[in-house]
Image (cartoon, rainbow, N blue to C red; front, side, top):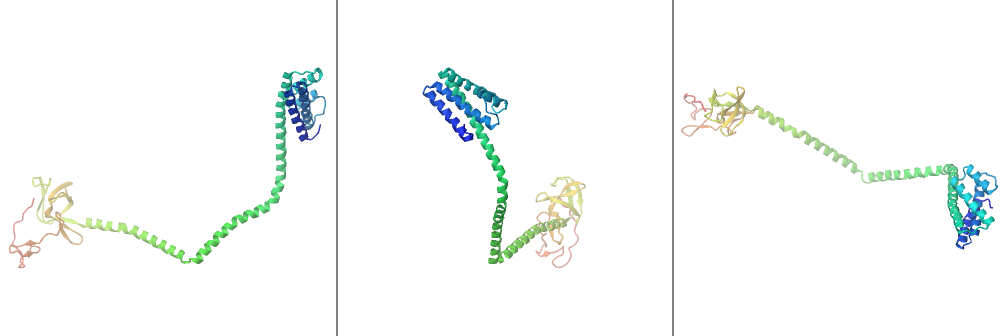
Amino acid sequence: MPSDTMNSWALIQQGVRDTERLIGQKQYNLSMLKARQTLEYMVKHLAKRNGIPDGDLMDTIDELYRSNVISKSTCEHYHKIRVIGNKAAHDEDNNAYNANTAYHLLSQEILVFSNDISARRRTRSQSSQVSSRPESRKNAAPEFSAYMLLKILIPVLAVILIIALIRLIHPGNKKAAVTTAAAESTATVTVTTAVPSTTPAAMETTKAAVYKTTSSLNVRSAPSKDGDKLTTLAAGTVVDYVKAYNDEWAVINYNGGQAYVASKFLISETAAGTETTASSGQKPAAETTAAGKKTVSGTTAAGQKPAATTKATHN
């Protein structure tokens, strides 16, 4: 028997094909003999590969099992094929059932045998690749590093060159961009600071308004002449003005609460000295004499003060 694994495997494959062919030809005795012969190829190959001395087929099968080279079921199959082959050789058995049983068991074990050979080949190939890999890496390292360095540097240099060319061709763009950004920033600051400037002034103007009575004026509990009179304010009295109730009455704070006065007899004096009535918001109209001539501050057209009159209390 050739010692090379490939030759052994070729003989085993050929033995299986011959066993199947002989069964098809109904030569069952020869088929069983061929199955036993193929088994011998397998057993001798396994024994030689695992350092088991060559001997009797039965003893070699048992030794393979004791050495954990084959499983218990494989050991039983091997012996079954061996016994069928011996019966065919010594007793000239030509039974179809035995021939098919031997072929069936042989086919199963051939599959196990081929898987074992394939696994060993993969392991051997991986081991050889691992052992040769460090040397190949060592030899390829300088070339790989140089390539990677160039791969990184070339795009960086290209970008730098493009930026330099843009700056040479358009030198003023950067300055214009800075100027534009500065202008936008200034405009933003101006808008932000200008918004609240008018609010305090308006508040100061509102707070500066002072309301006074223009004549003796009644303070009532309701915005009506039928309301209870709480008190009478003398002309020129400063009142705590709250708001206009309607076109005729105004709300003021009085004695811890709110009361009502006739708004046409109130005058508002602003910080600028402008006087307006509380009811219309306009400057008080000048009084007119019976002759139709204007008077200012109670003075007649002739420049003389009018005679004393009796004061009237309004509302």
